[in-house]
Amino acid sequence: MYRRMSGADANDNDPEIDRINLRISRSFLDVVDETWRERGFNSRSEFIRYALRDSVNHPEGAGVWKDLAISEAQFDEGDGISSDEIKATYGSDGE
Image (cartoon, rainbow, N blue to C red; front, side):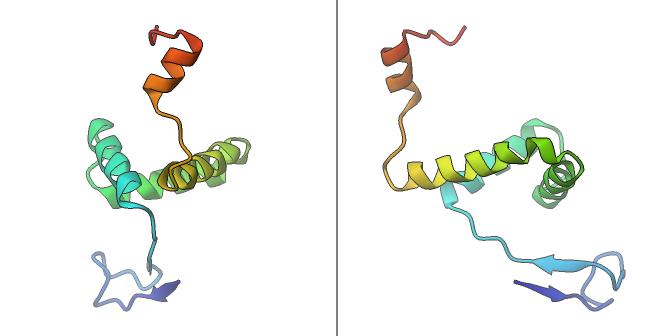
């Protein structure tokens, strides 16, 4: 869902700017927030715009986003596997 922002609503008074609502789990939002800060973005919005732009400009990588969304949904439903379980199963020490 989106709504067209009027010039008065937009930070830069650009009538071509749209605001969208995005529903994601709190746990994933925490990861997004940690990521944009670690990577030096100025804001969550700037990071999300960058990620969307990158996905559109490089569609060959779009499958990664789909896989991530599926994994996030599975994890939220309790179907995920912890990194400790993976390490125990495959004997990986992270190196």
